[in-house]
Length: 76
Length: 206
Image (cartoon, rainbow over the protein chains, first blue to last red):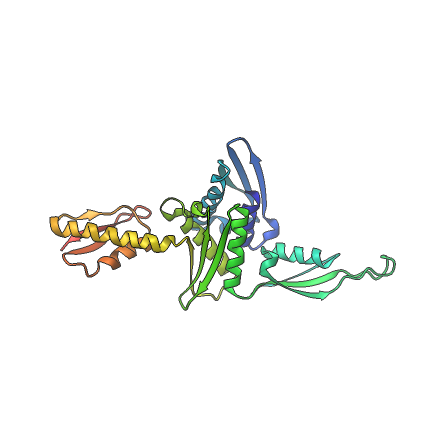
């Protein structure tokens, strides 16, 4: 999950080196905290959060297989 | 097209640095080694780092294929990607045993995935004008056939009964399919009502 999110985020931003994902995992839930450069926030959120929504959809599709729910938090 | 120059103790290390900063993978890159590393005398004097220039592989077709393949890999999905191109669109089709989760409810996952991939490809190829289309196991074609059938059967009832009917909410592409399918259908006309994402086609008797 972590790698998937990193791979998507790196391709969206201007400063891929500054993409960082922390994975916090419990039995049923995975929390992914995504951090990017401040100037890149808009690139992972998008107008009206459309990009962030699409990222969440794709990451959750991957999580279905593992029978887990994934929450993607974009952290300042 | 963006490229990245990087240095490192070995060619490999330099390439990895450049790939990371471009946000791409090796199967998707053209690597130009400018300087081989040099240990220098006894590793002490005059040692020189490797220097490479890396840029994304040149065609949008290669890029989208490699990118989608990598995504499938990270998602643990075993699928094959076939890319085709014409004047209007660049299309990546995914085939495989367990690719259904990429479609999602009423194609939601597929449309979000297409949206992301299309932004990502356009970042690398800013001059690309073509529409970027993703498909999974011919879902789009199958869905279009279903929509046309639905449109015609509802239109027949509307024409017979003279009472307008609203279809379920659809995205703009799906609504377009309905409007086009009924543009010459006798006795009815179509409009849309409501706000996204709950906008619906309404079939009205004429």
